[in-house]
Image 1 (tube, rainbow, N blue to C red):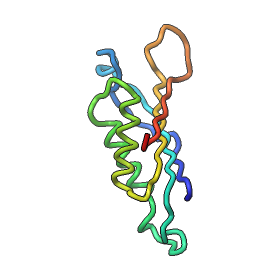
Image 2: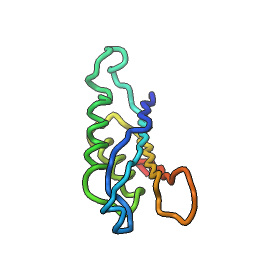
Image 3: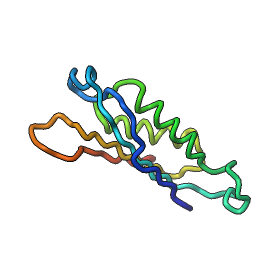
Image 4: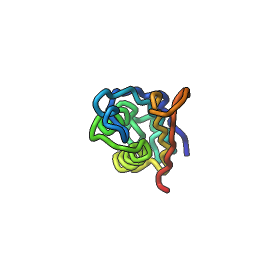
Length: 119
């Protein structure tokens, strides 16, 4: 096994429970930690059979910038499922979604959630 990590993928989107979050939108950050079954891709030094980072980024982007979700947990799960479906060699996907401007009554750096798939 080996692990591919994509860190701080940034997207503008409109997720959240409050109507203002949909109206105003904000930046969201995504980390993907993908545990991959190597098959013959490493010995063959071939992109075939491994995870293409560009395609993975596009899968993440389509979900994060797509349909509004109330929960960042739901976003993370959807990303994990989509990546595992697109790349069957992924045996585990840990997806973290960060929301820096969460509407809380105080000051914080960000709220984040990590979902691991399969559960």
